[in-house]
Image (cartoon, rainbow, N blue to C red; front, side, top):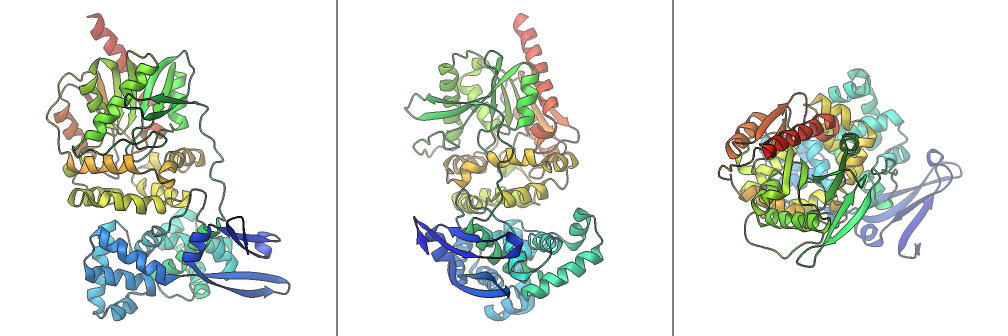
Length: 524
């Protein structure tokens, strides 16, 4: 039935209590779901089985493959795999040899940074549907439709996401033999024989969960207490900011990365406040709630505009000088140093990214995407839309845990739900469709090139994590020592991309040290 803009179907099942409502936005449900059939798993109980419109998804995937730069032959093979869930069937549908199909799929997998074929299928499938801000992905419909156990559901979901059976066994603390046994039950229940087919079947069930908005509340760990500030920029745009207080403490500006927005993680807020600082965070143009600006053809103009906004924000708060801590955002600090050097009392930049063309890292999804942006800057906007569509809490958490595999401290801290909630909160504006800032900064990083050496930056400290899933840390250190010869560039042992979560005290100690040195230089 339809009611007040929602389409609802109700069914009963003992695993979920009495009555469950399938609720979703009409435009999504009507485009994605083509029919509803009913089954009676037991007397008096009714189960709704909703099937995805694969023809619609095929058309979306074809457009996506073209935008990504797949050749026609690779695109046809990927779509065939997506539709059939089997490499041999995909080869037959595409009219090519099995070995040729494997070669094409390997190229496609490499292009998007997928570890294996089921990961490729899952990544593409979940990136094709706009989920809406509140919709959430989960695997409950697998248990509901196929009557598998909780552990079987968990194992199946991990394999569909791209984990090997050995990785699943290690993560769950069980034997690989038990994983194989439990997975065989799920394979039989879903009627598949290979991992890509498993991923395809799971996509249908996950898209059903997304369409139905049957998900967990992911905001169980609210943001650190703060005041929302709005400042009017000199061009009339509104700049959004957060003031974490206390109001009379020493202000420190916390800059977000190009892949997040302004919410500051609780570990960094607490560490700063414990040392007598007042964290202030500002959304840059086109991020979060700060209004975007007219487009500019000048490479790197987005960083200059961000610097101008910071000057306007500090002016509105009567801040003549301010300390800075960043999560990435090195190019913003450089732009601010050029626009208003006297404003910067001291700066600590964590994990400063080099321009994308200067990074040689080949492995991993994010490294792959940055390399792809260098070759095809026009693809940034397309990939941003795909990224935002697939940005459920579960997908973000899965991506984070994969990216932290080589860094124990990152993996440990991001396994804690309060930290993952902080990170996801900083991504939510992308899910709402606010992508302009991300697109402009990623395009600039792909095209701006290496800056000439900059002098007069002794008040800067750059902290590079020993582990990095995007860049080679040694390359990063060499890069910034060449660009900023006066700055202190340090490697933080055991730290990774989430340094402000796992090593917040180290970051704040570096800031305090830099401020003391700045005071000595001023006195001299």
